[in-house]
Image (cartoon, rainbow, N blue to C red; front, side):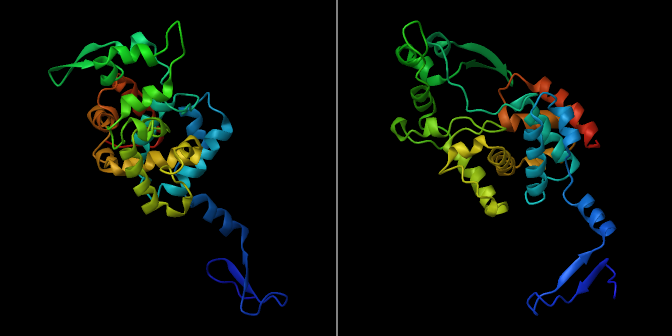
Length: 278
């Protein structure tokens, strides 16, 4: 028998087609190959990030991310550390990534508060539409007389925003926040799907025609990776591992969030795990 340099032995097997060859893989060679193939994140690492999450859910995340991260060029330590620091804040220790809840009370829909952003005062509330149309908040928000009409709240609040159509298009409801980064709006869905088609076209994920597919682990992960790429976040993440760098990533995802400190804390964990250097 002639042993090839790559630890394979070619055998002619009579019962198979004569145009085919069967290969024997040396056990040590096979183990070495498996150990180096797409092992960018591990279950042990995710156990640190998501201690309360179901182990099967974490294992599926490991498998999906490792399968696709090279395709999206999201396999460097800095990108992985920044990406999962953001995901930690979005889904929490149990990896909860359900549909965006729009179960708002009438009073909450009308509520406003003033925040300072870049030295400017901004009025903040759940949705501008209901602040400007308080009677609609009374009609569709939750109160003592009826439950919240979440579909109408979504369609009114998100109409003609983020690439959505008008109220009657139902885009607000179909493309409400979902997934690991709470992807919201037809425009963001389209941008993410474009990247999925480009880098993972054989994945079978179609978040435009099947928006609920984001509620699967595979759909949630690929839509988040598609969003990440479509917003140039690889470039932002590769700039460094300082608090400023974390804030720069966060500002792309949600510049108005109150969780910037938490995301910096998350990154202090992920950068140690993936040895992200300054």
